[in-house]
Image (tube, rainbow, N blue to C red; front, top):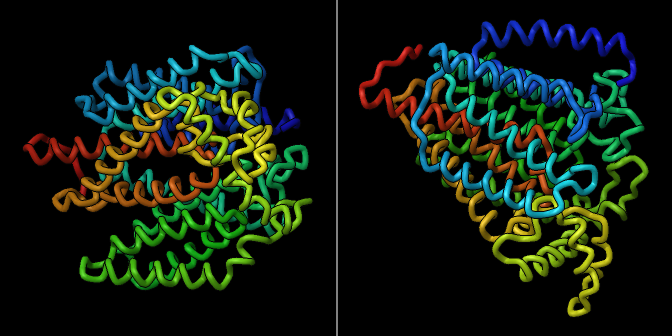
Length: 458
């Protein structure tokens, strides 16, 4: 943004409301303030160039949140919880990523590898820790779900306006600025990334549907209308991975709200319906015009580009199977694998491109050790979410983030098979925040089951 008046007004408003949120709302509210600022008022809204990486409003708020956590911990306003296997595994993962970064060319491309470590792993891990150590209650969880529902509606409405070329309805205007041409014409949202927007909207839709069991018929009609807005926003991303991830996440949310006897038939019917729709619309799904300036042929070619980068990743993995080529070293190292003539694939097409699969990206850069740690961590976080959802003795609202996590994981995995979604700041922030919240809630429920005192509301 270039308008100093708007920047100054936004800075004053964010500072004022940020102070209120941090002082009155607690640690969870502080986490949500960081998420909101990272989503809407991040790098493209305003940044100040510095040595290692630009200074942005969300990074300042993150530092304030860490200070707040330290102060609140000393004042007894936090809720310290013992470390579990998931926490130790996260520490091991962060240690490996730090080692991988520092033992390679971490200052390459204007310190990009070091910045990637900080922005996509260390800062989200800080959010995880603060959320995990926060005092939790049904009221606090409701606040989180309301926040996500409202944020998702904003992103969906903005995405629809972008997709329909109604740019006057979009705010902030950097979202539709032609100076950022990538994905222009799709519902890329404030993240400027349709894949990230698709994942964010899927999670927010699951948060919205958490209210379904408690609403009356008019309330359910309202939720269906809101679901329609989300569906249009997700469709407007014009991203196949986002569509698949949203469908998978929605199916899980619906299936696990059904009685047990209906779940398998409902899931089977959903799979069959998805198969029929995919078979009937395959050509249209493969080739359609999406980005401004991109043809349907170029869109179709993107489908056949995936095996090319996958083959490059496989060859790189075979050479360095344990620890990989180093975090954020893929683009520089992949050029040595483009001359393979043992395959009919034209690997030269991959020159200059990053990896297009979140798991292959981690495999090539951190090897089996890094991928194993990450898969193990996702597995433990998912186990936490399932235990929380299955905790029938816990208050209704305490259990809801468990189901929201399943929707997030479905969207992350499905979209991650087509894109390296770990390089989207807000996706990583949301993933770690929700994992930390659930880890804290699980330990909260276990303490309550053991007879510990709680301040739960109904």
